[in-house]
Amino acid sequence: MQAYLQKHGLIGTDIEQFFPRTRDREDIPVMRCRETGVVFLGTMPADLERYYNQRQPDNDGTTSRTTVDGTQIVTAAPADSQRRLDQFRTVISGKRICDFGTGHGLFLRYARGIASHCAGVELNRSQQEALRAAGIPAEPAIDRYEKGSFDVISLFHVLEHLETPIETLQLIRSRLAPGGAVIVEVPHARDFLFNTLASEAFKGFTFWSEHLVLHTRASLERVLKLAGFPQVAVGGYQRYGLENHLHWLVKGKPGGQQAWAHLADADLNARYAGLLQSIDETDTLIATAHA
View 1 (cartoon, rainbow, N blue to C red):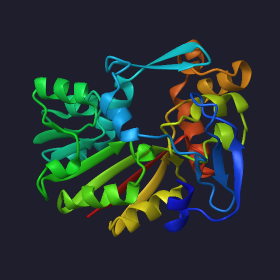
View 2 (tube, one colour; view 1 turned 30 degrees about the horizontal axis):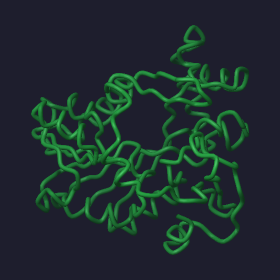
View 3 (cartoon, rainbow, N blue to C red; view 1 turned 120 degrees about the vertical axis):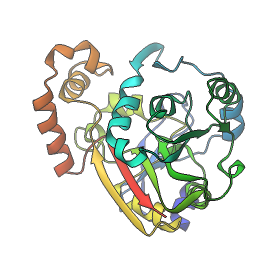
View 4 (cartoon, helix red, strand yellow; view 1 turned 90 degrees about the horizontal axis):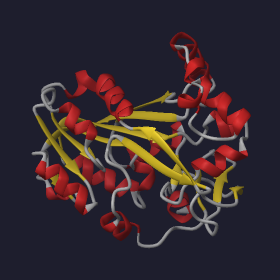
């Protein structure tokens, strides 16, 4: 990944080891470019496409299960899909949409009745079959669809999994109708928990062999522009609240949004999110770009 990122000017030559391993692989170090802040894997996992194609889904679409150091963490999945629907309702209303890397297709299932047409791209065979059984067209690759087929294509926490993101985005752009939009949501390389708070426990949890690169605002914008999108807007978004961060600091474990839900306050979390946005240390970046 390092050679690819350097080739496209996304990182420089001043590279440090940021963490010695990912949560699932002791042999994969996590690196960071001191010049740009981009975080990436020091060793690339092998046969990723085959892995995604053949693996069995480890959740039912309503929960996300992650095992870290022998402990299974269960979090609710529908909340993010509903939040995305609310965020982009006006963008997808009456439009032909495609969700790239859609998994169980929760976003598409929610979008039916709002978008004029919903389709997905998903490598995993069992999830393709489940989507088709639900009446949602699903293909293993974006080039299975005709050029100009969609008005909006979304990638929600997918870009960080791609070995050649620029080339994939070029293909995606070719499937957009003139003036069509792409929506890209990714984890942020400047997440407050590991960028300022330097939580070693959080690093051990969040770095994963499937996440090949974590972007900054600048690198995400550059990737989209290199893919041929002339108009790009990148903003920060905070998915997790103060109660989650406090739980990490005190307990060194995820799940604070459930374990300490009694500490959650909507107004306080809105102000906290605003603070993190002001210092560019949200946990998530969202980009929109037009063909």
